[in-house]
Image 1 (spheres, helix red, strand yellow):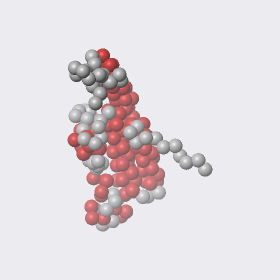
Image 2 (cartoon, one colour):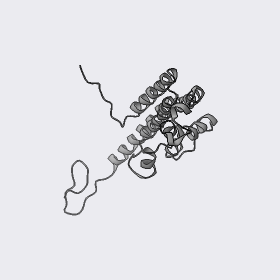
Image 3 (tube, helix red, strand yellow):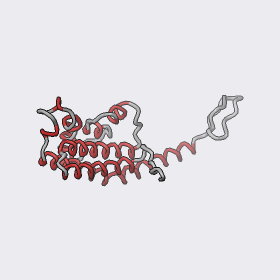
Image 4 (cartoon, rainbow, N blue to C red):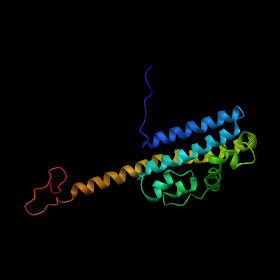
Length: 183
């Protein structure tokens, strides 16, 4: 049997595909009355959808606020790493502030009144899936524009660098590829 083809984790499309898969998984878990895990999967779907936007934006995922946000389960923090306020959408704002609590609460008994499997119900799962659907739909809508804008910026930066005059020191030959002095 041929192993599955893997997509690099730095692909925004891969992050969005996984978000959509997690959202479908949340719906299936709700259907079989696994409400706590349904809420967790929905929360994960929203987190991955937002992270797909960070990747498309071209964020350096290992530095500063973006690096911290990347490792965070706080959807509002991850979203705010864009340095843009959330759009004027009450549903999206509600999703960003409500969904993170299900990352821990849906899995650990010390985060809720008893075991999560007995603390969550169908109405909880339905509501959390609806919130996650808002986030995934938003990411699906804005991802093409983010990818296009990032590609345009990268192309403009490459063109600007190509137009820079070579930098050299007297008596030190410049590298033919970079224009910088060779050691």
